[in-house]
Image (cartoon, rainbow, N blue to C red):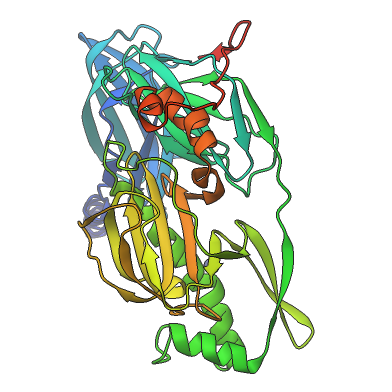
Length: 460
Ligand SMILES: [Zn+2]
């Protein structure tokens, strides 16, 4: 009898232990506000015993529509300990739940822990079901684009949408309402970046809150460009000068020898500085701050998107692309604003040395590097031709010159187009602000873009 009681007690104790050791999950659903035809939902699940079931459903008007189910073999007694946290993604929306209607709904996710008790955890999100896709219709103009250069397209968005712009391969460009027009009538300036192959089709796109995207093709012709490849021969004297200029204290780019320090600056720091430049796209005004063509000064020492092979002791040690123009013969002279704009950066920027960045509105910005002295500060409005400081050789510069670059929505583009009054009238002003063309010059002979014959292709 005693033995039976003893065995019974052991069993009871074991069951209590199993219950105590059973554990709930930490379940987190990435924020989701709207769902549409097919909206991705991501879950982060942490349970040391793992989960035996994950299910998700949408509740609307008293009905429950399953959208996801995943199970693992149940383990009640010999559960796994220390299961790694799990990331699970699934699609929620009308594709999975055809009876969903436009309007409010609730997304519910449940997990059941994979142990004796099988405890249930739940995460919910109040969502809005948005089923109508946006529509986007581009203009029917002829778009001539230089590889590495820019273009402007206008388009109309309709339906429910929250974001619209242009996509060129992996790049995305913001759009703005056309000046004086309602928000549905938009334009985007975009680059055809130098690093894309010549067969990429730029697209206008619009996306709604549920992630449903519509795209539209527009007519374009690309003029491919061959970018120059040049050797840049490094010796110890040059590297010493450049490394000391960028990193005098040795703390920014430490390394066992001069070459490794130089390579750190030339690759890692270059990448970081280009990202800092790209991030300035958020500091842009929604108006045209510039006026007429950009000033072109100095002798061109390096072209846009020159490819440089760095050679040391007869061996190729690095390969980088130079995004901008190097303008020399400034002889410590003034660095002039290439056009009217607002200063959004005026300090050290690694390889660019003392650097000024001007915003010209609608994501268009100009960059001035290697300055000896900066006489402007962020927020200042400057006029075309106004001196912003003195040219120098700070940063990664072999001699005195101004590094001049331009970018659209954070993507560096060939500034040469902005030195060309005809290009500006033809490609930009005729679509963005035609009234400015007559005002700037009454004898303009710039060709207007021609309307294209035939049907445009619009895909949803
Ligand atoms: Zn340069």
